[in-house]
Length: 319
Image 1 (cartoon, helix red, strand yellow):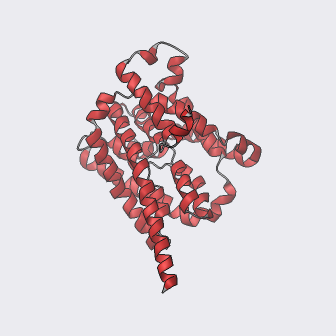
Image 2 (tube, rainbow, N blue to C red):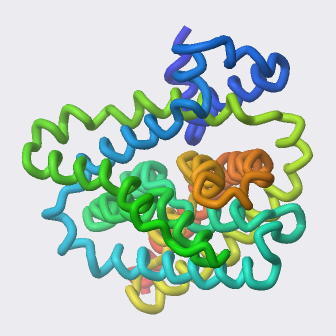
């Protein structure tokens, strides 16, 4: 009964499967996870930020600073473009629609999805379709994948301003990880499997707060926010990759997958600004929908872009 291999075959399965199982339990038996510590601390949002802090530290240990200069031109352009697009459209969304949003999509859900990046899926795709520089960009992508970026955009867009102490508190575990991983490669090796170990616990903590009835009601709005994300973010990035970097665009497309880590953004945003609190549950459900949908569609898009490149190269040789 090889459960692990079956779960791993599902895109993002280590996080998504425990999340869905916990959501089912929470929907049918809403008090199950509230029986007391350590169960409540381990499997609910009570321990979410501890898990996030650990994942940030572990991710930091995997960032090799010696790769930065080599990959800065290629990955740096994509990352800066991604942040610019997120800020521009995030501020515009709040300006025109307010924090309540439009079509059932709140500002916290829209910006959390818009800024999301799944470096793990990117690396998996680049191991198949990319080159060494593409794979080295994984480290830089981790810098823009932290939840602090959407929280900063949300706070600045809603006029709350940026709580720099909170920003620093979010970045400290990541920076400590970078320091430790680059001081001693053995530390980097020791923490290498850490994220995979913690993902199921993080998925469970997310799922224990999801009511599937709300998620079902949010399916259309979840589809809407995913489509907006692909149109607003992926298409311009592919264009930038082709026009500025003279690349085929598959690496840009691979950066446009919503990460399960983004499901922590609504709770973080509500912690900084209580005005977001009424939208947390629905936003988490919409983000979960976007995680699943982009995990399926993005690999297909990347495969098509990479396949087109191979075809064009073969055609030019034949001619």
